[in-house]
Length: 19
Figure 1 (cartoon, rainbow, N blue to C red):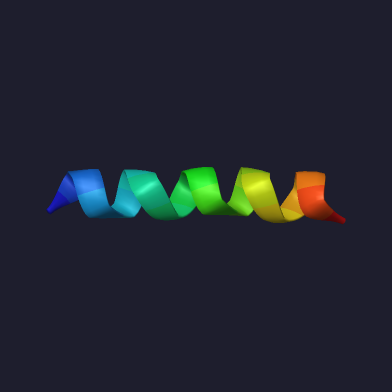
Figure 2: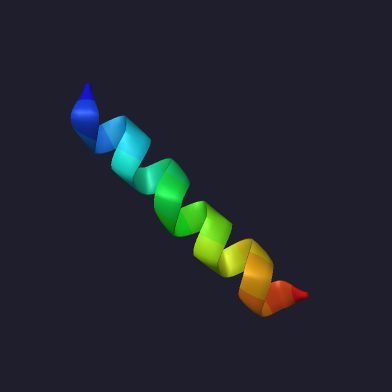
């Protein structure tokens, strides 16, 4: 399930932008 982990990495980017 590498794709799932990849989605989480994208979330981190979104969190940084939201800040």
